[in-house]
Structures are given as C-alpha cells and as structure tokens.
Image 1 (cartoon, helix red, strand yellow):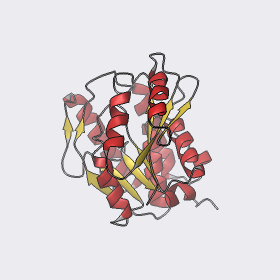
Image 2 (tube, one colour):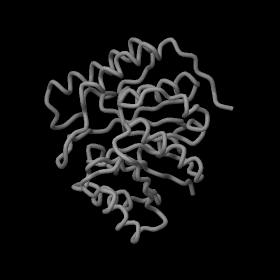
Image 3 (cartoon, rainbow, N blue to C red):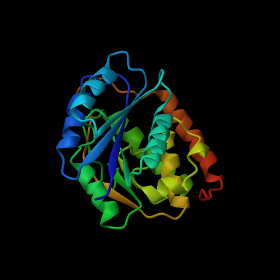
Image 4 (cartoon, helix red, strand yellow):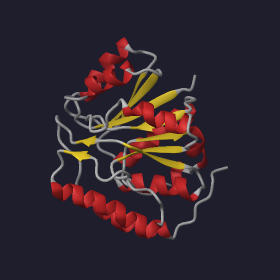
Amino acid sequence: MDRKIVIIPTYNEIENIEAIIRKVFSLEGNFHVLIIDDGSPDGTAGVVKRLQEEFPERLFLIERAGKQGLGTAYLTGFKWSLENGYDYVFEMDADFSHNPDDLIRLYHACAEEGADLAIGSRYCHGVSVVDWPIGRIVMSYYASVYVRLVLGMKVYDTTAGFKCYSRRVLEAIDLDDVRMKGYGFQIEMKYTTYKLGFKIKEVPIIFINRQLGTSKMSGGIFGEAFWGVIKLRFRKFRRKH
C-alpha cells in the first residue's frame, strides 16, 4: 500500500487540531499526519502530544520556535516526508476550510489518474467558496488570473493550499532553492512543478471559510506574491540530481 502523509502547519489552532486529526484518521487509506507547529502559545502542540499517545505510529509533530512562515513549514515537512519514505505528500489547512474527505479524491487523481500533482481547486469550475467576504473572493480569484497571465501556467487556482504531491515531484525540486516563504510559496511550487514537465490535475472542491480560530492572512503576503511572480517568470528551473 502507498504510504501517504498529510502535512498540517499550525499556529494557534487549539480549537480545530484534535477534530481535524481524528477526521483524517477516520478515512480509508491509512493516512498519516505530520503537524508542524510554530510555537503556538495556545497549547496546540500539547494537544498533538496527547493524541500521539493514542496514535503513536500515525501522528508526528515537529515543533519550531516562533512563526517562521507557511512556506518554510511545508519545506520542513517535505524533507521529513521524503526521509521517512512516503509516496504521496499532502498539504492541508487545520481549520476545516479544506474538507478532509477530499484527500481521497486528490490521492486518486495521482495514484489512479496519472497526475504528479493534484490540486484541490476553488476555481476550475466557477467559484466554489463558502462564507468568504466578496472582497476576499475577488482578490483571491483575480490573483490567480494574474498568475496565469504572467506565468502562462494553465492552473485556475494558483494559490491553492490543498494539494497532493507524488514523491517524484518533491525529489526533483531543489527544495533549498524555493524562495517565497508566505502564500507565494504555493505559486512557486506549482510553477516549478509545471516547468519541470510534471502533470498537474485540478480537482474541484468546495472551500469553506474557517468557523473557529482566526485567519493568518495579511497584506504582506500578497505583496510578496505579486513581485515574486514577476521574478519567477525569468527564473531557470532544473531537476535536482
């Protein structure tokens, strides 16, 4: 059986963390979970440690000192997952904005339909977002339009953070050369995958705004992504040997 791990970065997610872990473990397919916690002062990591006693071979935790950025959390998780022999590596939020049931659909897109990267897409079939303010929907949607125009990448949801990577993609990317650390990281990883010639498939999902906890979005996130996309357009990409 393929080895599958779901990476969930956390910062102050104590309202959601136990429920999301239990939900993932209730799914068919023996998913494992790696939590990467950036020093949450609310005790998120303590909840994970307690659950590790119940799920010692499926639940893993990396604790980092302070907020170091979404991108660096995932890069840490990617390297750990490769070192520990996982075949498919997933990204997912802790707040149930991504439906854990869709992990199975992302996995099938890779394992059975030949994709190297499967993206849970909010925009490949219109706009599938629930409970977001209209201003945020417009900003997110047109951010993806902007990325498509600048980079020429045929992906509708370029900033999506719900994904499944096959192992061969993460092995081919020089993870130490990934430069964007905020939400621009999501764009850079997709574009690198695209430029290296891997097959990308978008799987339509319904994205639901978080019900508990607070959003980690900020204006600086979009500034990095805006200028970073222009720089990406002129970068050279080579497979890691």
